[in-house]
Image 1 (cartoon, rainbow, N blue to C red):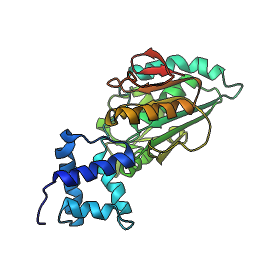
Image 2 (cartoon, helix red, strand yellow):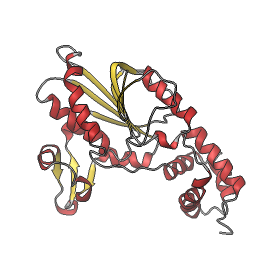
Image 3 (cartoon, one colour):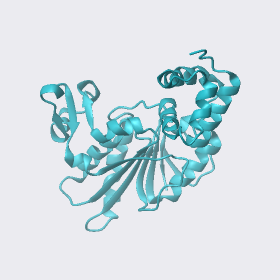
Image 4 (tube, one colour):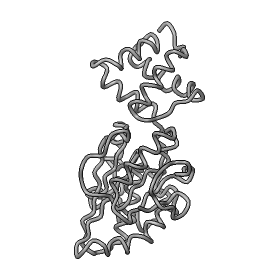
Length: 272
């Protein structure tokens, strides 16, 4: 390989492409991150320069590598019951929302930017604990732009270090303990996996038609978007949510400065 230098002109092309495809805003301070993460893709594909790599991913032949490029750029930090106050709030609002659904209430949640699945499974456990034995039509649509993390999410298999924060009674109820070659791993049981649909979705696209959502979790995702992209996304969420539904965003995020119709409830929690 002749050079791994990331010239300003190449960085500018890459960040515009990433923004157009995913909404992720790669400012100048992200140049070294891009160089490090995409440098691995260049070496893997034997590309001689970032310019050659850019040319390839913008062709039809490079469409699969383009997805891998977005996978490499996106950040996927998560854990079970991360930002626990949101799950406490979800427990509080569940009873009133279930009463609105009739004899067999329908409950729809969108977990946007679900990463490797811990958030979606945490939501499912909270809902199952709140619902108990009551019949309910529960679906959690869990999306991410990264195909790599979605494979982990769909499998629902995690090393013991990743489940340590989960209360022991929930582990016993909702996880199977790995044996033999899977010793040291836990797998989410079918009774939880079956209510979750994991799929690749770009938050820059309009959501597909379907039921309105009671709850949308989109946490620690909008921090990677500029204000205009954030506002457009928040208003798409509003349009797809039931009246009285709740939006949860990350504790480091805020809707301040954005034009929207959500009502502020408490830090990082909003209601339609």
